[in-house]
Length: 551
Image (cartoon, rainbow, N blue to C red):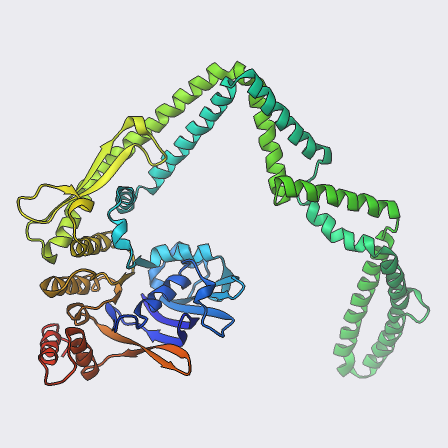
């Protein structure tokens, strides 16, 4: 679970620390108070895209630090990130120049590493995710996520890419003689341009390290000779004087054993001094002050620089381009001879792709039935007495792609007598919210933290009460963070935060306070439309809290 979050210079937050409880944590407040900023900050520290525009005015950078329970991480990830304790920290910074830094337990990592950890720690549902549920392309992804088809989908993608690669070779073999000659000439010219220089791996880095020494060879030689003379060659050199001092100290130690340690230290220092002199002697002997050698090195560096500009940006890219060009030239020169062979390869690869797509289809059909039952069970208590929910899977062998040949669509019937129809055609905003809540509850069953930013959009009354109860139930198995406008949801929380904005001296700050008893009742009453203790809203707030066993 998420234990603590510290947000610094993020949007209109200067420095904010929040401690979270197990179960359901709810954020409420007036519209525009900044409730979603906390959710955005959590997303940022978990690898979401950072925007320099979100850095608070006057600050150089924004920083978010999150403390999680280590029990939530798989053993492999704990070992990978050297997490030995019961808790671990994630930290991310973004400065005005757009430079981002990320850390796990104080060790630098990439932002993609934070995103990898996010997938096993937190499941986010933002304000705009409702609409994504209306797109059939998302339905396929969600079904595969539910069923754990990642390995099989990956195999299907690889088989599809193999088919595409063979098809490209076949197309090259079938092109016109004039087009083939044109591409062959261009590829041979480009390859010759690289091979004439014939760079080796990391040669550019080696040149960049050597050139400064070559450019200043004369001065470096003069200084190296002087230093070597002072250290070793002169009659009264440093090593000579240190040797004399050591012999004297050794004689003294024979008379006073307390000087033995000092004698050993001086002996070690003398050895280090002699090693330094030896290294310096080798260095000066290796200095090349031949002008032609510098000219050749500069010319070589310039040629490699031009290749990187044209085929780079890195030298490794240039070498990869050369390999690709050799393969392309071979295909163009021998394409006609290989056409029949390629046709056979393509048929074999296509059959493999078709077999994998068929296997994926069978597994999706079985998973679709399980997901349909699970979603129906989750959303029926949310005001759908006769709801029908189905995941339709249809295979089109003529439309094989990287994810197989299936079209997946969620079908929905909220009322008795209504046929199942595509979700996008009949679901209202409130219905979508409830379906999304059920879907997220099912799909995030193994994720320890769920985050909902206004899951209650488009609902109210008794339906809001049902959604609040469902969130409370979900929070029995995992931690839930929720931004809400509904009193019916807020009363179900294990911990309530009130979010407000304070403006002074042309500066606006978000303030978040933990609600307890009286302040909680006042906030629930405000959400119901009144704050006067004698108002019906206040009495209603007390009733809701008592029903939820919060008073």
